[in-house]
Image (cartoon, rainbow, N blue to C red; front, top):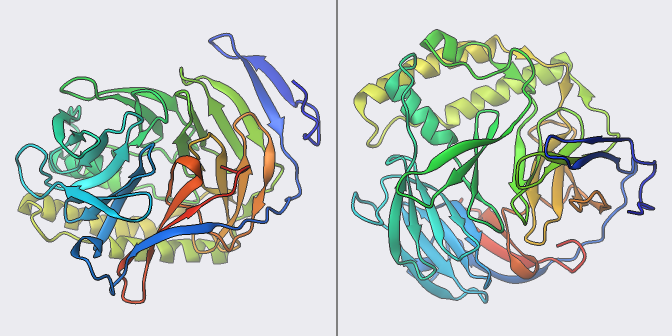
Length: 404
């Protein structure tokens, strides 16, 4: 394969366990600006919305189907379907314990077949709906309590990390658990979960399970985020290090190539350490929601956990570098959108690089554009925003050809 776009020749070549050649591809150092004009297709929501269906409260998940219909998981426990022109197509789901009813709907995904999957964090189950929103079945998550962990605390913690993302083609759903990427099979009555990729974790930063003291201890700052998304054909793209290094796998999970840019991570100094402590304390306070119908014993444990967490954050340890990458998403066509961090980590988000999964650098979008919340067919992208009254607004735009 000719790679005339590379600034240097192939940096490394060796074979993976399944016999595929693994490449390390060096991408250009300098940014090549991408002039990007997005055509707005429609927008819905805001405090001034006239129709009841358009008044959104908290959008916890979104997904396009192959026809360009957009499904929005709107709290509390309602899925709204919007047509390609922004027209209302219907809604389904409600709070309850019956078929197709949610206790706490936490995420929505649309499978290539057009089926809609809603992850119910409280019932530890996936609800599967047909393309028209008709309930088909419920698939329970695997749940094996660890006797060394407070059962209620483990329940809530496990439910919160059990996010799901669909493969663009194929039946698998990829979900993030600690530093693993898991493959979840929903073909039977119980979700069968198996490790797909074991991501790297800096020594000492691994999540701890056990006593409350062990769970709340050992907080680290600037741990490289595990960012990933599914690719057409069943593979994924992911990054797990502080450097600019994106790993592209095949359907088996074996890494086929690593895409690198020679962008040096920012050293951590005292100012950044204090800012990170303050940020995590503010985030903990914002997420301190132990009301509602949370069982009293779980609420008490969460309060104790929160107190221990505050102490652990104040005594945080730090890695020496700020990770380069902040987010990674893939388009329906398989291109990678890779967002770098800005000058102030986790406050300013940096530019977005657009790459092909084979290692071609298409260019960089400047930091004025944020990462789309959802990608769809034919270049559709959805942004979940909020108006001046903090009411959600959904803006759907279309990307130009060439970077989809």
